[in-house]
Length: 191
Image (tube, rainbow, N blue to C red; front, side, top):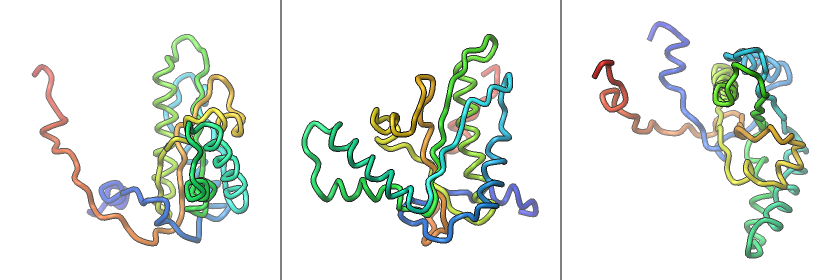
């Protein structure tokens, strides 16, 4: 394709977190990534999202909180192998951004639109990082729904985790996966 933006979009692919190595984005690159992520549709200018950045030692320190959440929330005691995995969860990539969706009560700005805006911010964040040559993985996993993790993140009652976005240099690229045929997902109205 002659258009570099369309070429990027046509080949964009998530990279598994454990396939993301160093280096991660520089502070200036991260600022650009987050600035672009904040340029999404935002009806009524409510800014229904925010970002929490984990890099360096903070990833492992938060991993201790994740392991504690696992111990307190699991019905059966987790194995030491599982706890080690939970402690290392955020260290799978050099940088992780927790995207937080928040709903603001405002007439004319339905909750659904605000949640969609947060999702758009997540994907724009991924695309900006991808355009810089970094791989990304936007996932939730159980930690996004954990009450203990929510508390540790300092989430308000109107906030929830939209995802954890892992960012780094791809060690290994994911192969192409099957995509839906347009004939299965596109129709004309009236049908």
